[in-house]
Image 1 (cartoon, one colour):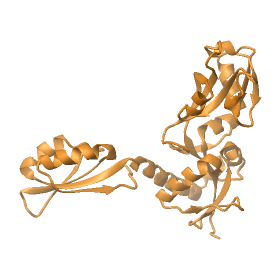
Image 2 (spheres, helix red, strand yellow; image 1 turned 180 degrees about the vertical axis):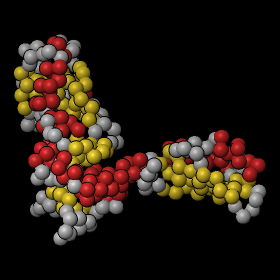
Image 3 (cartoon, one colour; image 1 turned 90 degrees about the vertical axis):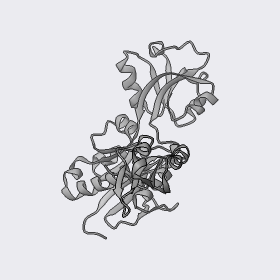
Image 4 (tube, one colour; image 1 turned 30 degrees about the vertical axis):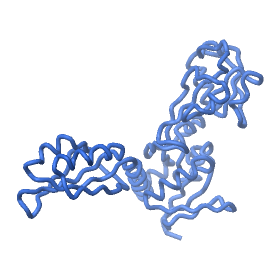
Amino acid sequence: MADKLLKLGIPAGSLQEATAELFRKAGYNIKFSSRSYFPSIDDDEIECLSIRAQEMARYVQQGILDAGITGHDWVVETGADVHEVCELVFSKVSRRPVRWVLAVPNDSDIKSVKDLEGKRIATEAVGLTKMYLEKHGVNADVEFSWGATEVKPPRLVDAIVEVTETGSSLRANNLRIVDEVLESTTRLIANKNAFEDDWKAQKLNNIALMLQSCLAAEGKVGLMLNVRRSDLQKVLEGLPALQQPTVSNLSDPDWVAINTILDESVVRAIIPALREAGATGIVEFPINKIID
């Protein structure tokens, strides 16, 4: 075991595979075993513990873990006093924030949060929901839901506060959204005392840099091409880039090379236009990481 060790919480459940895949792209190979809560990782300076995202912030605050991956929503829900190292916009389905929403049956008389006065609400995020109601000056009965929250209205409760990425589950259960309670993204958080340790802070900042660089590169590709100097301006005018394309001289003074990064979705339209404008030797290549 390494002399210096970072105890890192990896979220179990729905975020586990998405987290492992992001770490893999960043250069860390995490392997899970069905019989162990301690995933292996190919870094002797990191010890992983697999734990539910809902509990992560609490254990990080207590110092049982030095750091962990969890949602901003669960930091708010638990009221944990932790240091946020960075934001990581990914989830189990998409690369968008998730939303906690107030939802009711389509035929409900509830039109706004004010209509919840004296009503019953089911949710997994009891603390978050109570804070939301308090902010709006509404008194309602909030009960913890152990699951299948979408099927509870209207027979068991009047409304629910539930997390959604696409809204498809709500629609499938004949529910409509009344209001957004909280928008949340995944975060890398750290114990405040642990982050005061220079080695642990540097280790976490390095991990954050690599994870964020992979997210920044998603949906991007690189493009290399050669073009006559006389056609350069025409080509550049139709070539999008993150900032400005790199233009390099070639051994032939009449030609230059262009190297750029762009959205993969536009390549199919741009390459034919580049060829029409006189570009040759066009090469598209994958981008794994982008670091500004």
